[in-house]
Image (tube, rainbow, N blue to C red; front, top):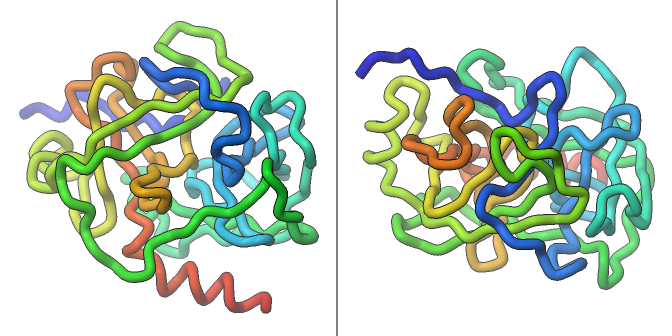
Length: 243
C-alpha cells in the first residue's frame, strides 16, 4: 500500500483528548488515571503505577516544558491534588519520528496517598503477548471526534485486542510486533488521549501512542499502544531506584 497516511500522536499543538464512541466513566472508578498538564492545561492522560510514579507516553514531553499531574480527578478541572514532576524518565530508545519505545515515567515530588479516588494500577509481571480478541478498555479526557470540543469528564470505551500480524499488515513499517500492541472496535481514542492505559483484566498492558491521522472516528487502521511488558526491565530499574 502507499504510505500517504501519517502517524498522529495524540498530542498536537492544541492537544486535547477524547474517547470515540465512549461513555462517561463512573466517577473515580479508575483511581489510577491522572491528567498530565502544562500551564494548567490538560495535554495527556497518564496512570499511577506506584505511589510516586506516573506512566505515560514519551511524546507527551515536549522541549523541556514543565509538566504537573492532577490525581484523583473525574473532572480534570477539579482534581484532588496537583503534583509537580521531579524527574522525567524518557525511554532512552524513544524515537520521535517512528514513535518506537514511546514510554515515559514521571517521578512525582512526594508520594500519593491511597484513597478511594487515588490508587495505582498493576502492570504485567513478565513479557508476553496479549491474545487477540481479548476485551480491554481505554479511558481518557477530551475530544470525542475530530471536530469536537474536549470533555472535562473521564470517558471510557471497550476495545478488542487485534492479532499482531494483522496490525503489522495495517501499519506496515510503523509497527513493531515486539514493542507494540493494537486494539480496535467501535471506539478508540482521538487527539490527546495519549499516555493513558490500555487495561485488560485490571492490568495496564499498553500506553496510548498513535492512530490514523484525521480519522479517529472510524479508523481503518487500529489504534496502537506501547506494549508495557516489553519494557519491564527498564521500568523496574527506575521504580526500584528510588526505594
